[in-house]
Amino acid sequence: MSNLKTLDKVVELAEQRRDAALATMAQLEREMQAAQDQMNQLESYSLEAQQRWAARSGGTIDPTVLGHQRQFVQKIDHAIAFQRSVLSSRQDQIDRQLAVLQSAERDLAGLRRYTERKRQQVASQAMRQEQKQTDEMAMSVYLRQRSGAVAPTGGLST
View (tube, rainbow, N blue to C red):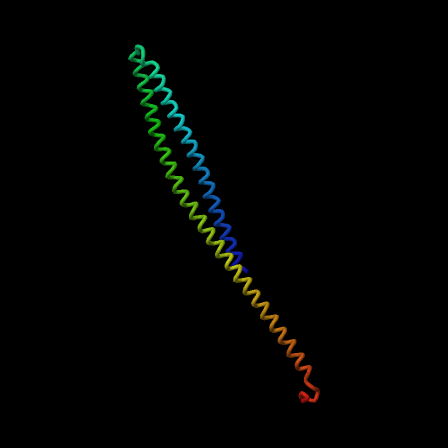
């Protein structure tokens, strides 16, 4: 029975490991969503800048404004490139964490199956022990009854 308690503790620790992996995965997914939202915002800024530039292209443009526009577009392009690397990094973290989570799930499932087999073995052994005791008690009762059927003269009548 002590072995089962130890196994239950091991299963509990495996559940905690799996739960921690799940929590980390959830955090990484939230961070990925925030990074994706940031990327969407940057792409939206870039599109707006292109649309504004296209609307102005019909008239004369001050060279200073043109320079500022180019700088702005370059900064947005740089920010988008940086954000792509952030998204890639986040995805790599999620992929690694998914492997950790899957490993924790496999370990937990294996430990649960092993613990269940051990419980079944203990229950089966207890049933066999109980059956053995019942058989011994029945044999003892049978032998007492049989010895009581023997005539007091020391033998059976024929």
